[in-house]
Amino acid sequence: MLSQAEKQWLDESLAYLSVKAVNQTEPAIEAMTGDASARQYYRIKVDARTFLFCRSLDTESNARFRLVASALEKAGVMAPLVFAFDDDLGVMLLSDLGNTLLVDVYQMNAHGQRYSIIHRVLNDLIRLAKMPDEYLMASDDPAVQLSTYNQALLDRDFGLFTEWCLGEALNLSPTQQEQAMLGEFAAQFQRSFTEQPQVWVHRDFHCRNLMLTDNDIGVIDFQDMVKGPVCYDLISLVYDAYWDIPADQKQAIVEDYHKLLTSEQMISVTLSDFLPWVAVTAMQRLIKVLGIFCRLSLRDGKMQYLADLPMVMQHLDHLHETYPEVWSEAWLFFWQSQVKPALATFLQSHHVK
Image 1 (tube, one colour):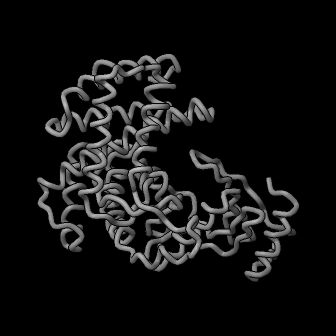
Image 2: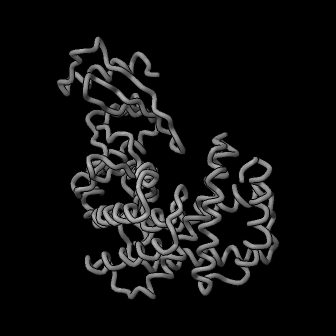
């Protein structure tokens, strides 16, 4: 729970906000379950009001969180407000967006209703992508300023797949010819990312980082935002690692977003030219997610993420089948003959169907 120093800071912060318990002797503190993030959250209840207490010792990440939260508010995108912070303690006091994640809404709503909800999310995504650069360049500290989806970040993403999926999880050792194929595969990502218009991207715009609050869509876990390819956040939503959107809806959502981007004059390409961007960006993200989920399970002991790997594999098969002209025969053979069977064996050994 909270240390004595944290409790004292919390009491002082609540007093500064003129929040005082009437029906309680002190604020109620409830630990919240975490996921892939290293942050720890506690819900603070003071009578009918609630707040979130966030603990993270990564002061640079905390500063980026505050910078992006402020930018999102200016852009009209709902996100937690930062009421108070202390970088020495590594804590922040935030507004509480509630408990209803988009994945919960997906589970509660019928097929057609989900589509209308996603369409609302797309409008928020446009507002996020179009944020003026000055909103996100407010800090003079180079460590706080946001980056671009540059070659170093692309290399790091691809390394997650090769190190943690191919290596640590599957114990595959690509031949020299396969290594050359993987090098060209990575270069294909770089070419597509460079070719696409650059906008602000959340980088994890999926159903566990989006919340429904009073009929508005709230965004969380946004501190790793960068300037990147226009398709990226769309892909996080459409090829969500935690939910399978039917193929016909995938296509409809992509077409809707293309129309939105075109009407906002954010792109000037036809749908037929837009779709290869979608395919390559989706592939880049999904193989990165394979690596992340393998690392979370093998290094961090978060074995629950193995249960999400079959969904990611299903998405990859959909990409291979829907956009066969985009992929090299060498990659398709490598995936079908080595990676996919080895993943199935790996999952079976951990009792994941």
